[in-house]
Length: 325
Image (cartoon, rainbow, N blue to C red; front, side, top):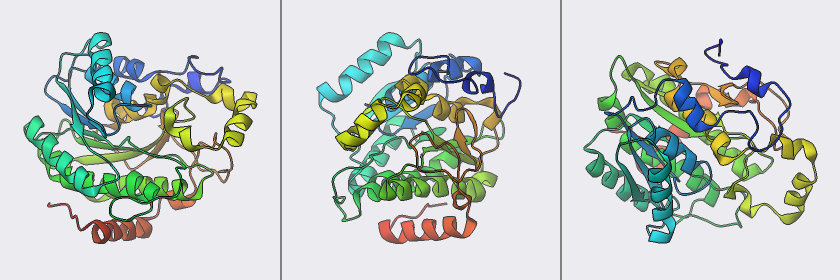
């Protein structure tokens, strides 16, 4: 690993061989960055920690010995207990691990969950991973009446982040700045793509405005993953993907899909910096191809200061929440 901002080039530059190939896992990222068992005094919060890449993200961060909290929309034992039991069984970590009730399609639930987290964590937060998301569900709206994907993928995380920014600021030190990570991938679904562009803009805004206060943010393309995120994709689309050897070769396990998000959290290369869109454990290149599930680059509008400012202001107006800094 010779390049700090492209440490796994040798593993990603060869043709992918499908889930479980040589591409790194989230836990491998932790080990490679010498974070295994080293973060006893740090606190992380991961949204959507009971499915998809949320589970290996929680597991990898817990292996650092940090206290890790994750959100769940259903606190029934059948939903959260298997996750907690699996991680505690497989993780070498000794930090706390607790689930917090948070339904991302309700801003009131997000607010309640944020306050519950602050009570449990003692008012400390070093890493916020805004992982939860939905893609291509039937047409619907959140409890407040917002389009479902925009409401869940962006507005809910905007409210959570705005409420926790003061805590992220207080928890930051000159030696170890706080970090916010927004997984967000362009896809050939208009509403989903718009909501994920909002995730990227939010991360860009946070890093630009709050970076001088010790909070850095990145956005992340986790790649194509065999997970429940595609549950709402129509059968014809899923069959088309399954019949395409190139697409199936690029698919990853959830553990591999969580690698780039985990790199954004624990990567030593990201201490004191951010404001970038990451893919395959490196900074994403520009591209004009967004017609495929395998698209990995960014369009020029991914970095748009005026757009970022407008979105932040609009999000404040829509939610009635402002960061108390």
